Amino acid sequence: MATTAWKNRYKRRAATVAKYAELRRKLKAAKDFVGLAKLPRDSSATRLTRRCEITGRRRGYYRKFRVSRLVLRQLASDGKIPGLRKSSW
Image 1 (tube, helix red, strand yellow):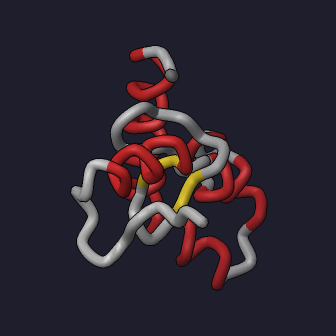
Image 2 (image 1 turned 180 degrees about the vertical axis):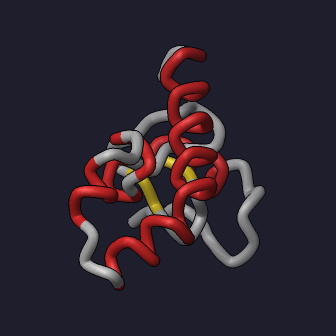
């Protein structure tokens, strides 16, 4: 499970990306790479890594459900995700 600091850092980066998205788009269209380099590093969308909404885990992340594979399995076993169940044979 990720620490609270990791979760907070992700939220802060996501806010920075959203704040500078329009400006970055304009600078890229104008091919002003010097101006682009002056922006904060965390304003780039590639610096974001998706994290599980519940645990904060970044690996084994399912985009459709926005959770990690471990949480997805637990939720499916508990029957909390409609139409999804753990297979057994």
